[in-house]
Image 1: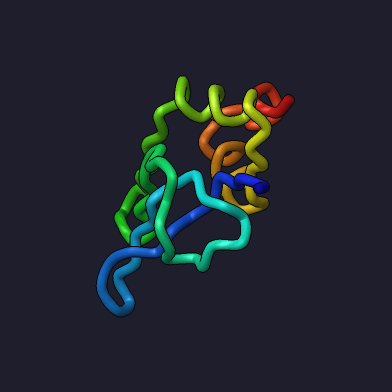
Image 2: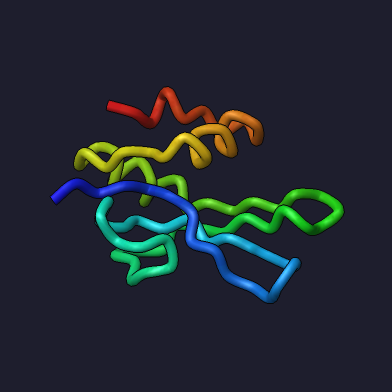
Length: 86
């Protein structure tokens, strides 16, 4: 079972927000998550992002793979994804 850290879409039509979650790589985008690590609000004036960094590091050390979008968000918000990858 391969585990990924990726985005899960929530919110209303045309007002999305995303939860940063740990999921099985074969699960659907909005499927059941193993654990929620944070959130991302792209519609707000300031793109708000909050992540439980200690839990993310723990999952990455266990072999979880960051999705490309999550890597981009971490780099954009000065949360260095490369230091979290094993």
